Image (cartoon, rainbow, N blue to C red; front, side):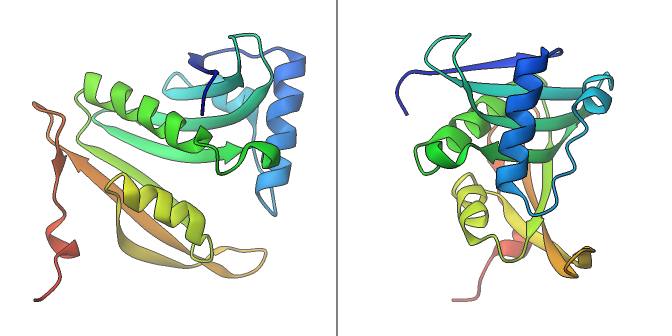
Length: 168
């Protein structure tokens, strides 16, 4: 996507908070974003994707926890009118730069089993499924797929997941 400004923030104003809440509500059947609570955590990071310059409208965001040598991706969401235009991909690219700079060895996330688009996006980055959490999304009883991406702490290169190997 052209003309996209990405940056990490520790604070948002009321207008930004409202925009993030709207994207969250449009992206998930039961939005649970507690922005103030998350930003109060020293290990939480919020990446904003803005259209145009740093003060343009927010079109997507990524919320993650950076804990020890791991990154836990909590939420990746894109405004409906900006989907399939590279916003989530740009946010994940930015996260991987940060993860490699921090010598992260493991990135973790979970997603609804029915979310094929998100799964394809994550798999494109090298994430592999490693577990299913039965009934994780309690409102519908939908299962969650847990995914991981291992990185070499020294080189930042992706470490192949041996459990993802298939027989030939």
